[in-house]
Image (cartoon, rainbow, N blue to C red):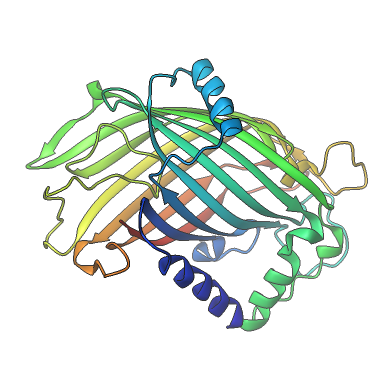
Length: 342
């Protein structure tokens, strides 16, 4: 339980920080145990803070400015910066085997820091997100002790194969995403409830992953903006507006999505570049996700040092990500986000 105590202590310390210029602070936990499995992408934890203050330095401002001129957001308004730290881990289907498993997903971990800059187009119809991420893989990611401690505390099988994980390296990733409102497919559903449709594309390049993605998101709720950032940044609140579900103390938004990705490289499947001693499998170059999420806001929970709390639940259904002589099933992951808005 000390692990969860530490996680809670970190999150509460974030809440205790001054709220000036902050939009949100939240923690997200993803795990496949919600669907009675313990394999593949099996766990992720991320702490995030969003700041409304444009505190970019000269170098970052020049880099984001050049990127915006290239991707069509040079006339967009700065929306916010998001700072995140987190850890991801992947394992094969059977973690009780100590020997190498050449036809199953390798053990791998990533301990990372990420910064995102979001820009809102004039008219509010498009959001562009620029992101940079750097992290440590291998034993430096601390994924092995984290999983072993979790399994010890909750009396689960001990993972035996971490001696055969993707090795140590400093890995990086830069990405750009453009999310645009599809007004022709948006409108009123019933009463004040609206359906908003948005399409998105994303390009990512780096030694963590390289891919191109595209997809569509359906958002159902009240008083929705034309387009919102990707969850958990669902902007479902307008000052003074009614976004309640059945009661005034509860606001809710439903999000459904689909995304397809063309994968060029994935360190979690293929190992480090030019490292033949890393475990790896043959990746599938086309991968797809279906997602369903529900966000609940509690407007009456605003406190002296923080804004109202929100909770978001999300389920992700992912197609098989690699090829093997045996059947590789699809995979489902559950996601829980707990946070505050200012």
